[in-house]
Length: 339
Image (cartoon, rainbow, N blue to C red; front, side):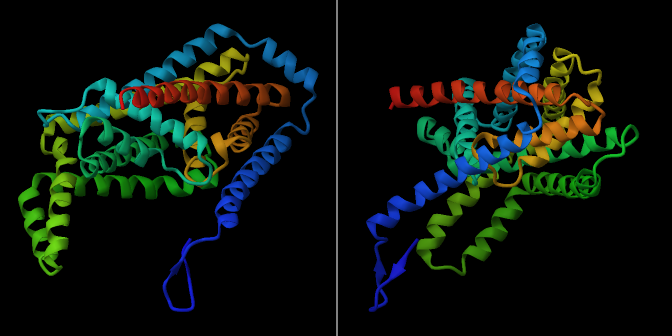
């Protein structure tokens, strides 16, 4: 925040305010998390919750954990595919730890989602990769994720009357994501034309801006290089569907772990609900928000035991957060050790 003095010049923010704002954000985040946890646990007896947790089958939980970590590895592999045309493409390990650092940032920092920018920055700092090119690859990646979400929506429509939030946004997401993907493919395959157009527009700016912006345009277009190949584009779409399958298997496997008689399609709805619920700014690790979404979905599907619903939500949440904290922490330590 910048204040201005009577002469119109910038005035530094007072020391007390510099210290106060972070504390206020922290207190607000903790307060919202506590309120969310109270809300989802207010009607559940501790003894019933303890019994539900004790009856959980660890084999299914362990398998779900393995699949979740495998999902992170699959996302890393897809990210590397986006660098496939580059001779000095970053190694899988560098990308994997960058992904986990980004997930840790998203988990730890409330209200704003800086994880995607953090992983691009982390990769650039430790491998020398262009950060603008990294942002280009993320645009492709997020577009593919939207396509997979829209695909899942249309697969589920014949089986469920979906909640209004999901049912209303599904067709719009499908149309926008497909249009965005086609646009990116066209841009990737008409790089020379796009660069000439960008150079013409940038040419109206001062020379100093031109020298700075044109390399950024080139780097951003390089991030779309994988879409110039039809085969690579199909592999990217296939890998995205594989990631989608793994993402659905994680909540599905936790259902039999707690004896909940629901199937794969119910796990798919859970995945959609949590993905949509992760879009708005939230509390640290979505504490309270995550549990509320999961409990609502289970209640919608007729799971009447509130203790079982809460036990499922807590186990699912820990299964996601613990690997993010552990792997993200390892990623940060590795970065500090290697400078």
